[in-house]
Length: 338
Image (tube, rainbow, N blue to C red; front, top):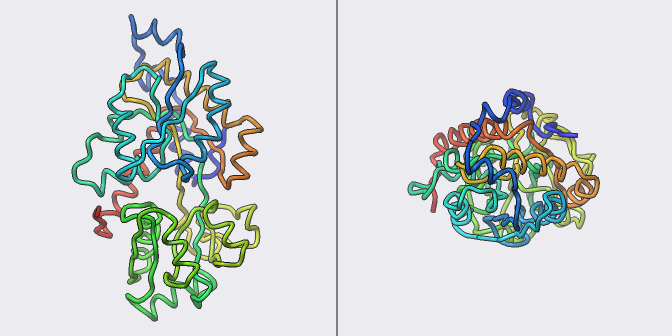
């Protein structure tokens, strides 16, 4: 069963509104391309993950890889192409032959944020890549150093206002969604904060545990072991519903911050000119894969929420809406790439 429950009602509307026929949304091809797509897939598929092995985007790729290959009847090979916050790997996919044999599994940052913070993007995410389906959502949490006085979101805001420009927050990169989530909070409440960017996720976690950084937005899967180990504390969940892994932790919405519910989604994309029947085949296989009980159990264990889109067109519209949202935050917060 498909689920869009990880997203707000407005976003679910975007997904449902796109559930028109794929032929009208993407345009059917005829002739050689159509004949070719009828036999798709005829050989192994490369799934490019534009980030390092073991990272937040690599995890769902490894989870769906075996079942997706089984359903498609061909081997799916994960190819990690790390660099430039996902730009290098996605550029490879955007320039690949549009035949469905080179696909990408990537995230909100690379598809909805990068184009707003990097001046010279070698491709345009919304026009050079075509959306296939969401795969999962990565729940987010707000965590803090054990040495940091606030123990709730209300206390956090009060403390920041009492200490303008002195409270530090970390992120794994200047243009990361983790950073933009805090910027959105600051813009909403007129806060003055000190951003400390890192290159990757290891540095901020180490300094957060040591008390050198005050707080940050973080993926549940990354922070859960440290929370359970008592090395950091959690102030809230940036999800619409409480997390089963942290049932006693209230959401930001419950604490009076409904506008700061955010989604760190992951999804599959192909080159923009890929024939519609090929996209449909991939979409159908992804829906079956994500809804497989074994895949769902593995995602739950990894701290992921499995979710698929109502259609490829619905996902394309969803990505465009998220790009507009984060583009507005980038402009208002004056975020620039390093």
